[in-house]
Length: 78
Image 1 (cartoon, rainbow, N blue to C red):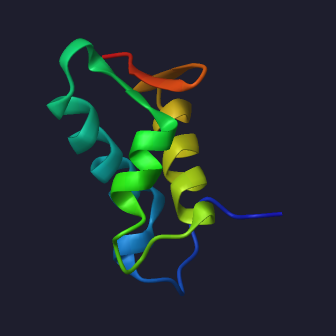
Image 2 (image 1 turned 45 degrees about the vertical axis):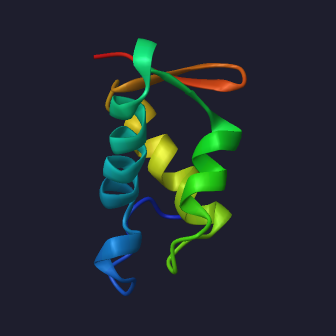
């Protein structure tokens, strides 16, 4: 089972930092919603990118109530 916070990983791959990157993309979009595919496409160019990091970043944002999911979109809840 994956841990949300792992102490031996780089800080730039931690769920709060990845969540911040996702929120930056959301802020640039009108209406406060962005496609999961668009997020993946924009972040896959980063050297830290992996599907695990993206998943945990979204789980972090969802668990603190900042985003909701409306398939296939991530919607800003705040």
